[in-house]
Length: 86
Picture (spheres, rainbow, N blue to C red):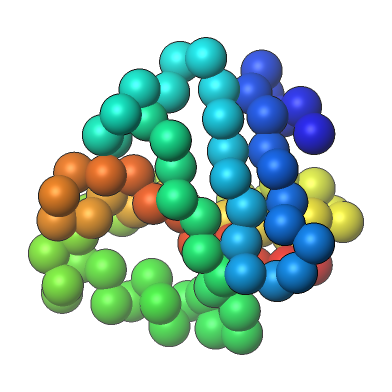
């Protein structure tokens, strides 16, 4: 699926997805690991900053069929996303 000039590959089960875009590079601008944030995305997000990470983007709707995601930077400066199915 093309979204915002990049591609999103949704796995056929609720464990996550992979986002790929030309502007992504290794590290904070690279391939983004996306994990299942179900059933409590907010609960996961509350743990990011106390664990040393940085919240980058509030929960954002991808499409109404796909659901939403939130991005954060882990302690190794990798961008990670959490996904919540619609």
